Image 1 (spheres, helix red, strand yellow):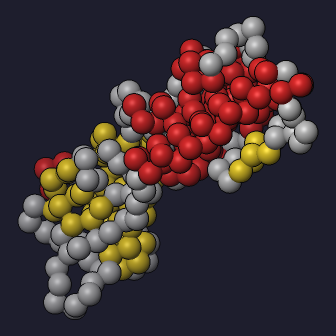
Image 2 (tube, helix red, strand yellow):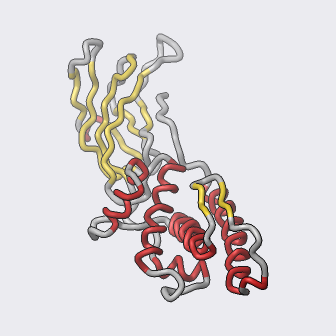
Image 3 (cartoon, helix red, strand yellow):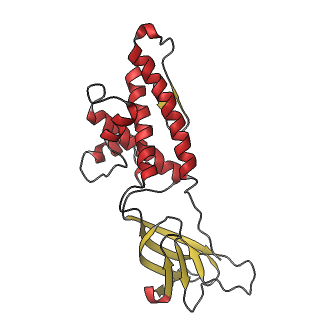
Length: 228
């Protein structure tokens, strides 16, 4: 995912045209109440890239399209008589399953499941076998699949633009932004220094509250793989 790259790599990739950000510099300018005469489009886009990486790290998933992932799933029975025929994938929504395989105790491929062997609920990430069951064993099932969104969810776009807008305004007033946790502004800024600076700081505070509210609205999207 994007959050696993360095900041310099993220910004470099954004310039290739292959990197689709969650928001645009137009969204950021609207949130910040400024334009490209204050912060350049290139700087705004760089802040968007870093904002998106922060979001990915926060939720431990990407909100891009067709993200490929390989997941190993433990099959654990609560009762020895249980027949486990259902697993849940960690990343959702699922777009397609590439391979679904079961391995034996020697880590040898035992079964390659085909789409005719199971039902898939893409929204819940649930795979349910039609007539068989998974054998109990840690690291038993390997699933290679793609997940993601054909278009960025609106709340994620808003969160990306909000975080990036905070970044550009903090850059403007010479402050520091610490991802996820906090930000700091230069001390001693008063009306005498200039009304634009005071206005920017007020907007930063407003955006910080908006960021908190958006995170609450989005909810806890990070999930764990379950078996039942």
